[in-house]
Length: 147
Ligand code: ADP
Ligand code: MG
Image 1 (tube, rainbow, N blue to C red):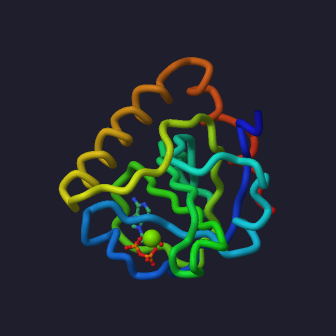
Image 2: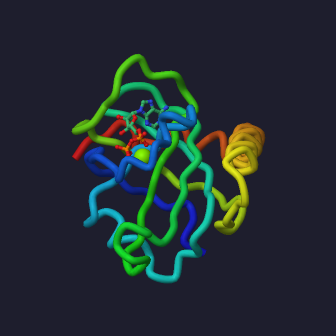
Image 3: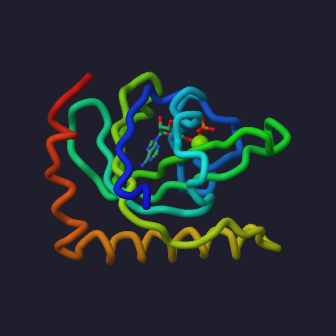
């Protein structure tokens, strides 16, 4: 009921969980952005569109979950953009539209099964975002207006 959900914020450092080493870097939002998520938004994996600074709009996979770093009392929101960036973009403005839900969070019994789950999330996101009703959100004016 909260979707599509629009938000933006500066990219901050995460908790060094080594996402980049897995080949799946995830850009973190600051606490105030995560705190303004609807309280009853289901945790799990979402897909949508995202844009760094005022550059291109890319498909994204977003993980919204309970943050182990804060003993699971705070949420975290991490965005993987399905696009190869030449450089990190800490400090840049990241704008995202969360469009749909893929699955709840799960715990995996191996790193390999975690990685393959993420890869199938990415494939699922790509496919769904090509559907006309979701595709048109990439042209939303939200990505042309900067606050
Ligand atoms: P952190 O723990 O600081 O979040 P990660 O290993 O998750 O570190 O890497 C995230 C950082 O990688 C982002 O903040 C961004 O600067 C950079 N980055 C490069 N390419 C991407 C991408 N395709 N999607 C998300 N972040 C990316
Ligand atoms: Mg990260």
